[in-house]
Image 1 (cartoon, protein in one colour):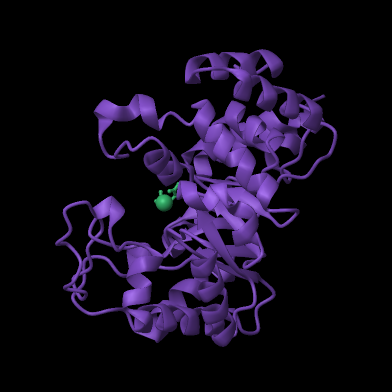
Image 2 (cartoon, helix red, strand yellow; image 1 turned 45 degrees about the horizontal axis):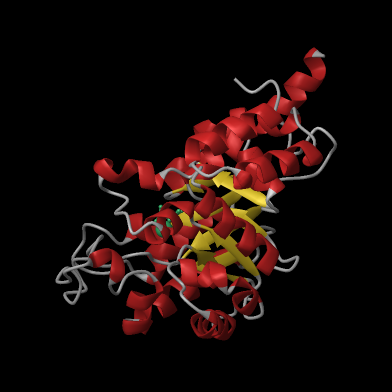
Length: 312
Ligand code: PEP
Ligand code: MG
């Protein structure tokens, strides 16, 4: 009735039969907190920290970073912060080595750049540890562009040294998805970045509109990589924070594939919440199987929608 519809519009994410799927917000900083709260985010699933670092000639100091991190940590009970994801694709004025690569998407970006400039990562982690001190919020920190278990292990160790116990990795490189089990042994959680995972799986630059067909998150090969990652997580949290999480039908499919939380741009939250509330976990699983059985993206989308009655 009207009451359950109202609850579904504002409550925590859950399927019709009560399987919890936390619905989280992607934010770029304190300026996005209001929109996330307004749309009922249960926490932040992806805090992109680049905004603090772009368009400046000196790196932000630890105090400035601490204040920005704290503003987000004060607003939510659960916050996943991604360490700086910069490289030649998003050059930084104070790191002259970036910006010179012929293939920026395949270069020293994300964690690779942080390994070359360990003082940047150390400063971020120190500011994060200080920002979380004394607050009830759960702080999780994850690295972008992690390729293998050795990188996951090193990141977890670096976090531990900085006093951050919940370190995770983004799964956005196909090699990491294929060997998810190995990475899970080295880290506390996964967050799947479907934007980059599609880019690298299909060798299709995500900035090229001409290749959008290959960036379609309904591509069965991408769904296979998500399923493999969720399975390899072996019971550890495995969210999705790419654009795919904000599509209501796909959100149900991702849930059916074993994904445990969904993080998206705040305005996408209500429709995803409603789609989950209208379907059981079994229906989500059937939709996921139907989509993976398809041979192309449009057939996958149609098959999933048939298994999810009532989606518009
Ligand atoms: C992704 O790659 O899916 C992701 C969430 O990270 P970004 O879009 O910031 O690269
Ligand atoms: Mg990414």
